[in-house]
Image 1 (cartoon, rainbow, N blue to C red):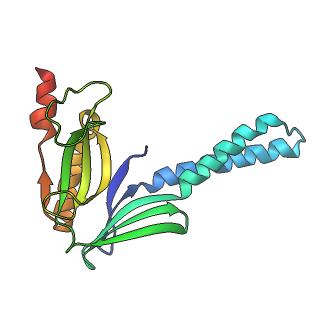
Image 2: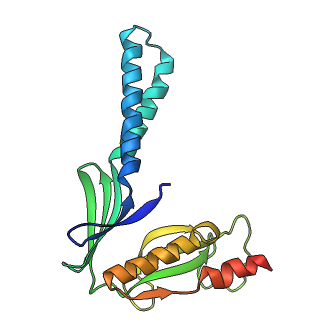
Image 3: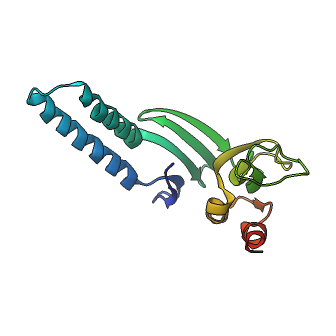
Length: 187
């Protein structure tokens, strides 16, 4: 939905989240809609059509205060997932000792892993996922980001390389989008 970026904090933490600019724009739009709605109500023109700006103002406020981020802290050797609205967040902390590697995996949407006869189609797009693997087989993992291999594959691979370099965690890419995805499409 939103583009996420890797930010380095002054205290050494690496944060993967939306930019502050996204939140500021969402808050600004919510304020503009609220002010317009207030002037609309002050003039006594309240009608059923006022529900539309109210809904959009609430949606923009939700975007401005929603938190979905990953924090990698080299000092405490932990990776934390923070998800929630404003101060009401759920925090999941994983120690670097439990994490086997940062992995990029490719799969086809809607088709189980290990299926031999795979025919990509508009219903079964090739996908890339960035994940934290907790065991060497990759059976226990947490997804950080999932996107289509065609559009987001290279960005996800570069993100995995950046996170591995900055955190010191191992990196495992099952195959490169450049090697299989784009070249096979050019033939």
